[in-house]
Image 1 (tube, rainbow, N blue to C red):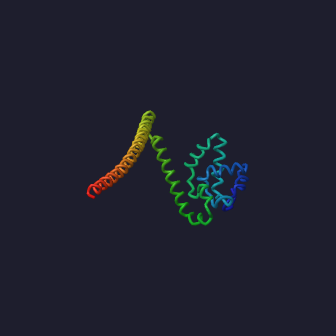
Image 2 (spheres, rainbow, N blue to C red):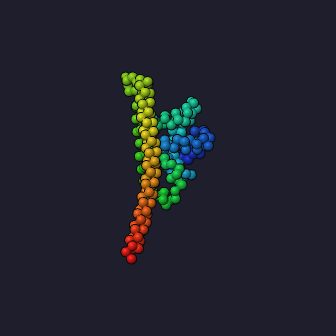
Image 3 (cartoon, rainbow, N blue to C red):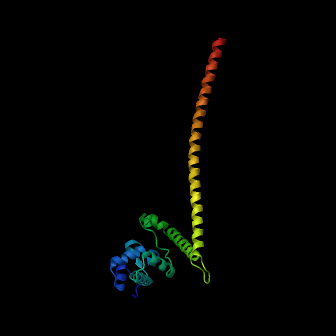
Length: 200
């Protein structure tokens, strides 16, 4: 491995004897597991990234899918807090400079939450040592949870329809009240005019 502090995509491609376009694709596809510095064309990778690129290459040659590779990387290598979505790179340089620490912190928190959720799901699905997991029970539990969610969605939709109907009725009642107030004013005016004509 090179003794340099950081490496470009071209240098990693040469070191691993891979096409540069392939390394470019992998650096975007698996960015959250590749230790790097800089953004865009200035992005460089730390020496330990070479080992990760080599692992990606090996797994893909062995027939792993990209999702399988991502799962394996998640188990073997820590998430990188500096893997920032492309949307941030499109912000203005002034705004990006002021927001970068906050965005890095938010990215780190988000990635940590994602890791914790992933571990929680894996621990819920995978049995503990010596513990038997009944797939039928798990499937039944998931189906029941899905059923409850579907019931809640239907209930929300029903409430939306009822709310729309009530809003429509309210508008009709408000229009009727406006009409009744106008009729009352007209009646009062008519009666006052009659009283004046009788008393004059």
